[in-house]
Image (tube, rainbow, N blue to C red):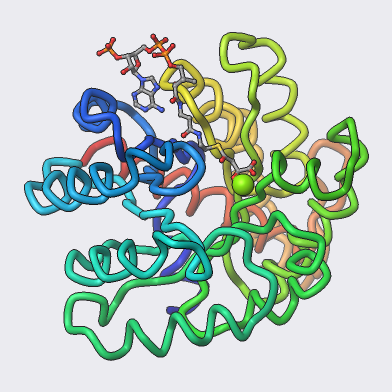
Length: 291
Ligand SMILES: CC(C)(COP(=O)(O)OP(=O)(O)OC[C@H]1O[C@@H](n2cnc3c(N)ncnc32)[C@H](O)[C@@H]1OP(=O)(O)O)[C@@H](O)C(=O)NCCC(=O)NCCSC(=O)C[C@H](O)C(=O)O
Ligand SMILES: [Mg+2]
């Protein structure tokens, strides 16, 4: 997939749903999340792993999730559940498989080779949880792995591995993964905000993630969706400015100028690229919300 195809849909809100919770799976059909991660890994207790796998297979086969992007986070292939998860997922062929705790490009390439062999997964993409020190260090290579189209930051695991106590202490890792993702033309989604009843705190963290350049935020509760959808969408002021920048630049170039001025700031061809990307994102959101 090329970058344009990858960016054809929004990923403002990416909701985790424990695959063991049938009620939550059903509820997802009416939620305004842009994407859903059905989780077989950390949100599912060991005793429930097999039940969750069977339930998810049944629900995904039934369908009814509309236009949302659907991905499945399997257990690591080095765990007792990973191979069974992969077999189940290969029969369904979701849009993407999210591989946890990725440490190297070799792990992704091995998974990609296996997907190649099954008809249902011919078009299945791979996403990587970026949440181990080795994974972060290898981010640039992982971002270029076969079938790789997105990173999800795993800030809980990363904090555990680093022994750090604040999000600020992970800024370097977050930005390193963003650099790697952008260099490869793939998506990059921010980590979860654990205090799911603290709406103000979530809004602050979403604003920071948007300022950094993330495409959206992973979420753990339906009440977080609207906040992320607002934070990661272009505002009306940004859309208006983008239109005025494009118009001013086109008028300037028609007169042989390479630079226009809008609101006291220069507008060059690179700013017009950004303005067009803003409008494309707004269009993608409108299409998603109309579907
Ligand atoms: C956090 C929760 C355990 C809270 O659950 P609960 O107390 O039951 O919430 P509510 O009573 O407020 O629920 C209200 C209704 O909403 C539905 N619900 C709740 N959560 C979800 C959801 N995620 N998706 C869809 N629907 C959801 C409830 O069923 C209620 O519905 P109804 O009864 O019809 O009114 C719980 O929200 C939860 O389990 N969240 C997901 C946790 C999870 O997925 N964790 C794993 C991902 S985080 C992670 O691993 C990140 C990464 O790897 C890292 O390292 O950082
Ligand atoms: Mg994790």
